[in-house]
Image (cartoon, rainbow, N blue to C red; front, side, top):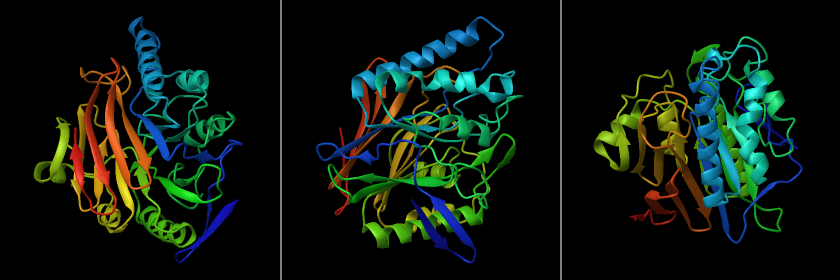
Length: 328
């Protein structure tokens, strides 16, 4: 299945995944676990490198066991590709092993370190490899857009052909390509969102990409937020992205990664703009690891952090229609 979108040029937006099973709500809920900045292969030639990867696997197993999510979002820097010799796909498979063991489907967006390994490590090769797994819902986006991981995934109602939510992905670049979100990507997001709204109605949606724009820090400094911001959010060429995000009425949550010591969720208008919890033991930071959980429901969205030790922190409930926020 595919969708044709016109915005000055002709674009084909692929929405079909390699998985045979569509994503579906269960008992009125759809739960997502976000794993970000895992950084597998941080240093494969030292004793501590493989130990870090083993510890990152423990984080994912702990979260998947405690939460039993319907879906996993890997939101970039899954690998530290620049430290990996020639076996990037072997590391990729190792990353996926907790999802395979728990029979949990997933999808990826790329970060700024994923595609830097010397062999079999570019974005297209990693995407093709990921799609060989039946549980993968990752999609190679339109080839005339910057990056690779620009796509969306519909979530269907239980036992229904009706789409009840949508997940949007953007590729914020980095690694072998520039760190940016281009005007064409932003236009694609805007028009694809509105075409989907005509097709599916005003269903709740979320958006994910790896590198947040600096407006997220501005909001943190002035807005209603949970969590913390310890790393300065650096400029990202992405003019118009923040304004577009605010303009999409049923886009209720955006979640990013990249800054390992940031973990926040800020409210503005009818949205939550969030940073995922550093999930991997690769990469800098001494904070406790965990996962941002996002639960979509008919009339509300909930998000919280599930820690590796299985504690829950920063639980927020956003009610779609009256924008009531509840923290617990």
